[in-house]
Amino acid sequence: AQSITKGGCKERCGNITIPYPFGMETGCYLEERFRIDCNSRSIPTLDLNGTSLEVTDISVDKANNIQINFPIIFQNCSSKTSSRDSLVVNLEDTPFSFSTENRFVAAGCNNLALLSRNEATVGGCMSICNVSSSDASADGTICNGINCCETTIPSGLDFFNATLQVVGDKVKDGCKYAYLVDQNWFNLRLDNNISVIDMDYVPVVLNWRINLGLYENMTLNGSAYSVTNLTSSGTSRCSQNSTFLLCSCSSGFQGNPYIPDGCQGFGVGFGVLVLLIGSWWLYKVIRKSRNEKRKKMFFERNGGLLLQEQLSSGEVNVEKIKLFGSKELDKATDHYNVNRTLGQGGQGTVYKGMLADGKIIAVKKSKVLDEDNLRQFINEVVILSQINHRNVVKLFGCCLETEVPLLVYEFIPNGTLYQFLHDSNEEFPLTWEMRLRIATEVSGALSYLHSAASIPIFHRDIKSTNILLDEKYRAKVADFGTSKSVTIDQTRVTTLVLGTFGYLDPEYFQTSQLTAKSDVYSFGVALVRIVVLLHH
Image (cartoon, rainbow, N blue to C red; front, side):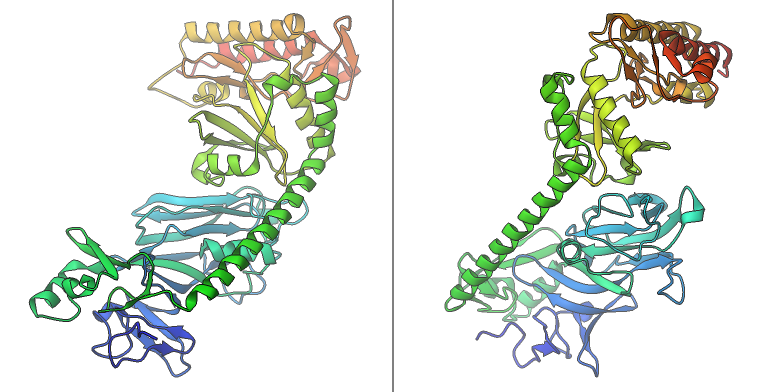
């Protein structure tokens, strides 16, 4: 077999092959930064600006990747004797950078993990609490934002500071940790429920590149390793820019394109390749089957059967509601990236997203799932599917394939009325004319809900935080989770008291009799705040 190392040099350290331009002995590597140290236990390590990390794989054909074991950061973990809640990594002025094949993962209850560079955030995500467990020690098989979140990293990342931050309720802190990890390994961890918290290191992929000047010097010195000699046989090809060189084997060849005649035909390896492809295909089929079963379980648990009954009975406007897939929303929100967060409340978190067709959306993700929340979720879908008014937030659809159900709304860019009333904004104050128009629009929306909708609707929670402002500062009434639809001839209905104290109709609170006047009372409180809170 053709050697992939420089002539006369050791090829392996333990079970790891060390291809050129890497090497272990003087004269066997391209430059000092490609030197691999093989210690007495036959474990290969690479020095990265003073830090030695174990090497687990090196690729030279096309990928130009090297896989290393990389430390995790953690705090308050009983399996650890200490805490390490931050990590600074500097690969500047080296041939290495972190590959986009990695993911940044955080686990634990209310754990905000961030990657920053020069005090600017370049990535991060927040894992919120699971109602049944606040500890991350049971890693689980799902990473969707509850006790575990993941996000991408920017291309060419060669410096970052990773940190852990606790947010929200500190009573349920528990174990928190975060780590950069090879996405392929992380997917296998989910499929096989491998525990990470007991590890000190996880595999990470680095890209490596060669300084073009080194090969130009070889050409001047007549070296056999010059670019001209590498490509003369036609079995490899090299491309270059003003700074770096990248080589790969030609189509139908494999091996090491960085040594003369290092690329060989597939030959007898073809049968092995077919076997590997077949195994990979079988793995994909099994994994797809498991994912489909998991989605079906979540669909039924999240009220999918109940919603289907509502659809078939005509209570839901089928043409207005779309059932989104979990992958579609995961991609739209960049894996629920913390940088996409629009707001957080007691019921959950709202993320900004963009669909494949370019449409901007807001995705509401509940914190916990119980019977009351599920009932409010289905109720909001039913109510909003019946509403068509320019001053009521539009519901595009929902997703039932995830651990907690998701609602997908139109994106309202200027936040809530509450923010403008309570947070000083010298650049754009709410004028008296704007306040009057907002109040008029909300009253018009309520009039429509009570009298003009196909089925009368009592909102039950009118307040400034449930009034959104669009790009032209027009009002949009939102949050219909506690709303109640009634028959046309009904003027009142006896129901469980729900709403927000301070806005709640006293008569409704005392008698449990919900009427249109209950919304009018709540609107009156909001109107007083619109008029009185003249901070600007």
